[in-house]
Image (tube, rainbow, N blue to C red; front, side):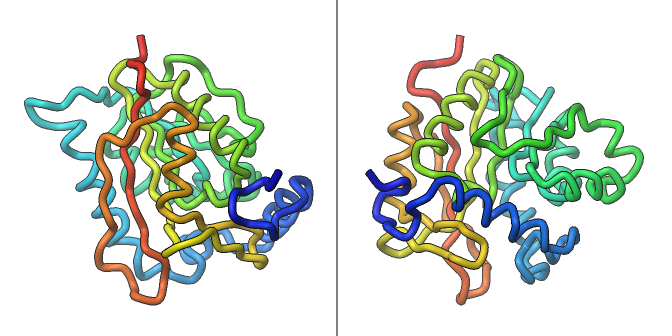
Length: 234
């Protein structure tokens, strides 16, 4: 059975993760490094993310709490610094690259770093999350580094870690048709059907989705999904 549906290039789980780890260890811990040389899309990315999440946090119909969020694949804390730490009392950073987390402590600045609850150094496939802990779990540009099984299992962990009315937000590249393999960083880009099939496998439903606009035409389409458990968190 393929580790990633529709992608025969990934035949070894061990090398899939080891090669990705090796790639990211060679990336400069800067915003440009985190964005693969596309630092110029940073502001529009952050603006669109804020706009997408805002209705769930602000206004008369807001139901999602603002106590604690988790930034998954956080890198040096780009999203936490420019977005999540402005929206939540406390943010935890989950990142497997130790050097990125060390840089995050400087990049975030003294005051922002004080409001980080935990710097969690772990891959998403291995991490243990606390139950009933987060209002929002933000997962951006990192799910392509997980096998199908680990992706679904991680989403199940996230479900258990959500507070009542909490949301999982996934912002990810989407391929046009089939799964596409990138040997350079050992990642895959899933199609819309493939990624939503994993949501379904993890017993999540899509509350809202949006196509990110104003990105360069040469890069993948990017979608933002707001997900919640099919069975409400008690």
